[in-house]
Image 1 (tube, rainbow, N blue to C red):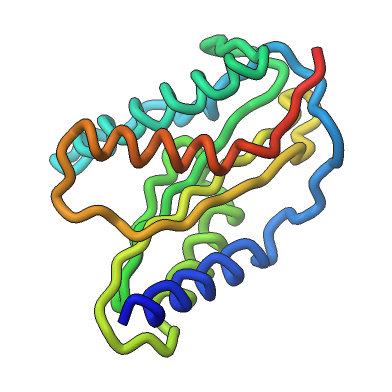
Image 2: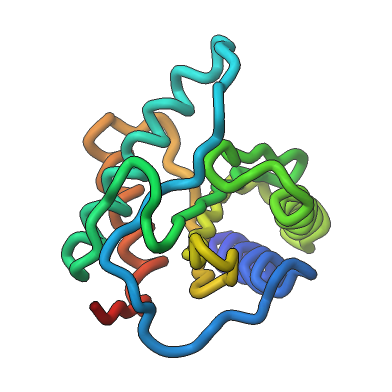
Length: 183
């Protein structure tokens, strides 16, 4: 059963990573000392948004901490690079995305559609629930994609706040482990 879950997740990762979205990524260290997150504009207030708000805070703190350790400082706006992230949660039946800080264009829609297909068309017969976090680093001036990395993991069921935070921090570190900067 565990092997089926892992092979289902592996298929999801391969499909999501290979989508028909911008795949050319510049190679080598990124020249930047500051970053900002995608500006989502005003967000509507819905009941489910409170949970998303907490997740976004944890994700952004983890990204800011990781990049600060690499010499790249967070600024509220006008960073040399822009960080965008997309979180897709899925199971054998449905997927949903936390995409406020990724953007609302065709790229986000294509990635969520690919995840939906990967999560629901696999050969696994037992129920599973997985989450994929994709992080892009984009040149703020040219909109050129400088780095795109992702990580897929099983979703924790009813984790404590500390366990959720630790899981998200580990996922961010894994997604950004090969991103290098030069000042």
